[in-house]
Image (cartoon, rainbow, N blue to C red):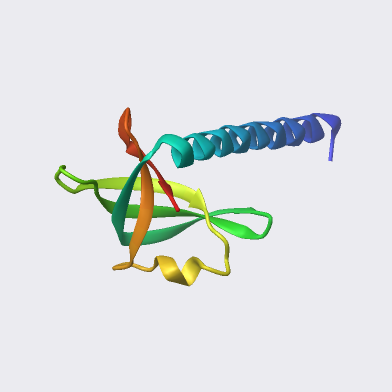
Length: 108
């Protein structure tokens, strides 16, 4: 492995860590200010990315917020492998919805 390859791998790793930091800050904001809602899991896909041995999963959700028509959202989130079975298609799960952008949700 050459120096250029190592540098490229390091840049990729730093970009991933930076993206994770942004996702974590966004998750904290949604937990504090997001609208409480329910969603029905329509589909679940593994993205192939794992963080601390937990998979990042892509969900197709049907989100129901009070006084609004239900709407579909595709959302990616790292989920503990210990509770992944709780997120199978048909499951009803709690979510937080960004009041400024309803397409942004957080499971939990």
